[in-house]
Image 1 (cartoon, rainbow, N blue to C red):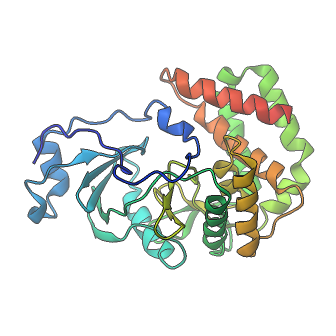
Image 2 (cartoon, rainbow, N blue to C red):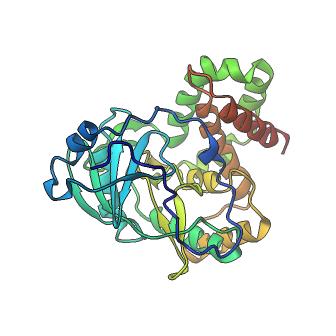
Length: 318
């Protein structure tokens, strides 16, 4: 069992097919520092699986709030934020296997998930990759809920909102009145409130029918399976019952090439996703809630703040 595991890219060894989409978030400062991978730390988290003792583990990229360790064909996923999201994520992975490619859950404890490692590559900036990502999103969104809100380990809504829109707006009001608002400044805050108000009727309509939302549906979590020409969807910890275009806004956050966007639209339509005429703008405005949320932190995170503020400014100028 290695005391200090070297960092390894989870796509190492996969032959590159095309230029990948820019995974901007992968360059951000971590939300929670990585723990030291001492023998004691590893032994504690591997205790339910004594047959794995003595293995060497390497740190995978991604997971700003979690730690993902790989050993050959296994991944050990450890939540670092203390929010008890592992059992919810286990249930989501087991549910999602019915409609998208996800890692199989091989074991679970209160402290970790043991998953299969699925060889993959970065999501390429191609029309076909966009199509498959759109199809996966549409399949995820076929799982509907009677009301919007946060999910528990049984995938029941336990923190319900009157609507997805009221939940998002209430959350944003708190952020805009605190650290996120201070980083944005009064002019940006007013512009954000104004653009949401201008599109409120359409956003209300989009938020009327809550569905399963992955809520972290971006290139760092949507990977490419070259042999299958399909996508692999990772890291379900933030999933909730909300508006379908929430995921689409995340996927298109960093303005990927138009062929990829066209592929996403094709995949969504093939999956029977109900797309309003202004779906791209609505997806962008829903992702604005995420961007505001990224600014709600006490620590110094200059790279993240620069990227997020620049994206907010582009959204407001559109």
